[in-house]
Image (cartoon, rainbow over the protein chains, first blue to last red):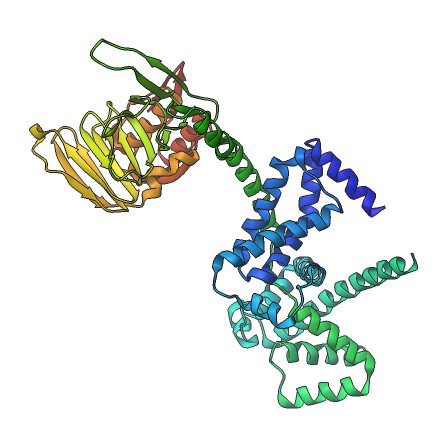
Length: 192
Length: 334
């Protein structure tokens, strides 16, 4: 079913259907950026290379030849671009070192799963109530102390504490829903 | 029960954000060993906390979708075909000039002129268009709107000479023993292998050269009494036609070469300069009736492939007190 839908999108894009292209963009863009970021650790650069992958797909759409799914094609293309950047950087990046240590080609599948998790958390953060979201971002990403956040927003430390715990609870809830779905798909596949 | 849950949630979030006191951390640890449910709660929270990436906002994602559109337009309008065709044609037609299409607007023709001159090739970018071509020696030339180059198609001889009227960007193929020379009405640019921009419109008060990489030398007719000047990358030399003076200064080269990407970038430009630019781009005449804005300086960018002249005029209206009125190809700003 999922495969069929993908096939449909792919042939629509081949025919120059911009809605199908937009659909694929909305479905995968942020995930692909997170995915690349696990390799490059430079988010702006990642956005740029993922954009380039979409540019190439559209420009070469007529000669597009996708053997598996749209999804694996996208992730593989982004990975290739990211690996090129790493080669270009010449400096042995931390990532490549880690790869060598592991003594096995790093698993695209693992990175895809991590990226999907990042993406899920990202949308969960954006679904938080505005104030709650603001406080969570200040704490988690700006790394401000509770007291600093309280000062900045002119609220009590107690409120900050409460909001952070509410944010975390809501994000976790989204994650649990997601894991249930994942588990569900997993069992389905195993039954086959 | 309610408040006990709340208490555990607080402990978890404090622990993860590094705000838990020693006592609180110990309590949480005790609770997680005691109750597998609480342990699971803590572990899922930890996953959420650790895997949270700096927010990628829906607005940023939307902006990136636009960016993709821009990149596609840019790629389709300039380089895609060049890489294939230029090499192929260049080899196939060795010794001939190979003009290439961009955005649909160039024409060329070789015209044999008066007996004294050998057969010269001419490439012109019409008003509002950019033309791009590869010369027989592999030199890449981008011609800006309303600009013409004229040259011997074989580029034979000790020097490779190109005559320019207007503005062009050159990426010169390296040939140390055969200097490349750009001749303009006012000055000569001598090159060994490098990238630079020359602006020499006959209807403007100055002629300028901007060097992006490599080195170039500017030469003037002996009557002007200016000795040759060597530029280093990042420098802009402008020759004032009326006072016959040369000014060399450091510049942001992209300001001068952005036109190749279909953009004009203004930085501290006066209205007069902007208006002259719009006239060149759109083949129109703009009459500035009121000079009160003469001393104001503007900065901004204008993408003329995507925006039309009215977008530009409206921006001028918004930032100045001037209003525009259109009569055919004449536009009055007052």
